[in-house]
Length: 118
Image (cartoon, helix red, strand yellow):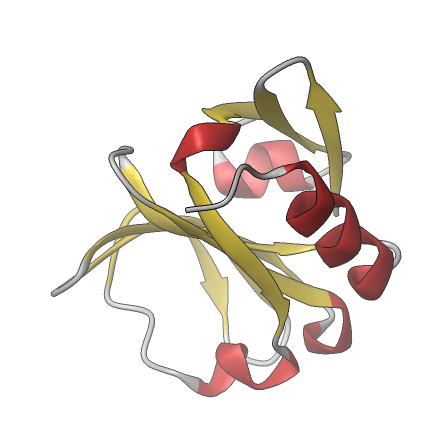
């Protein structure tokens, strides 16, 4: 699971527990100016992931790590699709962050409230 927070002009994504091992990351920092928006999207786990590079994928159990798609790199850390949030980025290493959070709607509201109008 991920913890999302805002620190000044940055969005901080902290990966917790075994997610650090599976995703091979513990923290991502993104300038809020590069965040295009966020949505709750439980169906995203059914979409093609792309090429894993590096990461973990056990169908129906976990998707974690970096995946390369035709649209760019996507970071995943999801075990429970019902709690998946998609964060759209621009001008960053990743085009999207797909993470599981404790309260998806509150997380999306925090991100939307904190992002400058794009």
